[in-house]
Length: 232
Length: 232
DNA sequence: ATAAAAATTTAGACTAATCTAAAAAAATAT
DNA sequence: ATATTTTTTTAGATTAGTCTAAATTTTTAT
Ligand SMILES: [Mn+2]
Ligand SMILES: [Mn+2]
Ligand SMILES: [Mn+2]
Ligand SMILES: [Mn+2]
Image (cartoon, rainbow over all chains, first blue to last red; front, side, top):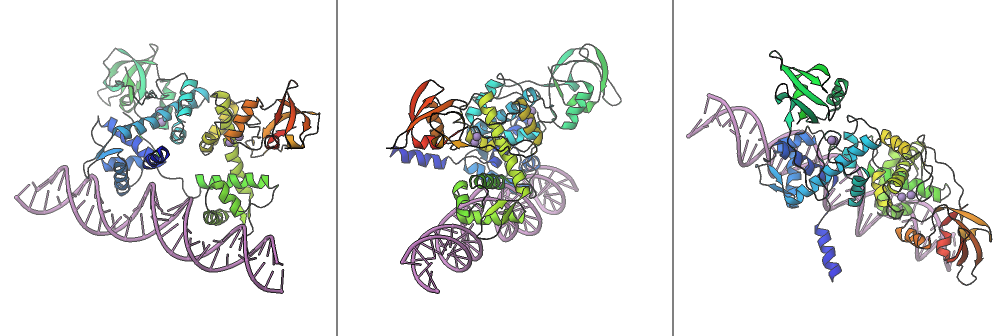
């Protein structure tokens, strides 16, 4: 009889599909970007590269599973259950990125698409062993924080280089764009996680910045670059 | 804040789906087990844990893509294209198994289900870097040979312990059953890859074998076990 | 050689995830 | 306050992969 109860419970706990995991992860990241405000159907359609109609269908489904808070036309946020799944996917994504860079020697511009696949591998044991194998890293190769095994995301305060005070040395801690083109551009400028930057001057003309890298060389970076360089 | 570039879109139709990859892999392994003879619909249904009707549908589809040789009611074999995909999947499966055991410390009885997922990760670069990282292993933790990056499967000659000559020391090189129960049973007997075995006697009554392990201790193994222990 | 059994394929249906087109609701502008 | 535009949802299809039930082909046994 206890077997039966267990089985019924298991049936109602329907596993989360690959697609559902992606929606939950994207809702998490977009909510974060929105400072905790509801995410809109259109934003989800853009990020998932699907149509708004498809998103509406999926939202009804995720709401039926109690993974999101959803009232028609009002946008969505994650429930506690939904956030737990989202954080697990993000944890796996970022741990695998560390593996790809630190153990296999990939560049930080080459790993995102592979991590998009690896983040769906379903084995808690694997995730935790991987974490240990990597030395329980706190940040991924882009400087993004890695949620712990209890599903807690460390809160990190970011500043943008474009808003940094003049003549103050700051450390580069992350990027807010992960496109290979941007990352490769940073490679060319020799700007990497942990380097120090000091803004000497901001051009009136194009908002480009004259900065000192590692207390050593001087270079100019565009506003576009400075806006997406996170420092502390 | 993050720029989010995800691809939710399913792999496009010219690519091979997870499901198709699984069918091709299973067709390869069953053909191997059949000494090169055609694989039947029912055997595939059993291995894929689906029904014969579903297999028929998939066979038509794989044949349309020129991945299998298929004439209705006649069974199937892989084409050169199909075999290439099958070997790539098997290579990835076995390399990941080596990773799980050698790097993450899993037991050989715990890895199959995880490797079933990892074998579908699509990145040749990743596979080859993983291979290098692992020291280009030639065999997986169960003693199965790993196809090389050119898609060639090393040919290995196997003998079963149940057929080994009496009083001749042989080395344990593999298993022909991969169930956790069997592998855990071997763990209890302290039988692992590379150990040596010498058959002293075979019981008339139940075909069980009296063997010397590592030129040291004496033990009895059932016919069921001896049949699935591969030696050379 | 024929009948019975087994294996395989076909027919028709279902679910998940997507689409386009149309309807409905909300937001914005006059 | 009303009209227009934008956003979101619904309606109705489509595709991949699966199912059950029925039909067909092949194999086996008499
Ligand atoms: Mn990433
Ligand atoms: Mn990252
Ligand atoms: Mn395996
Ligand atoms: Mn194996």
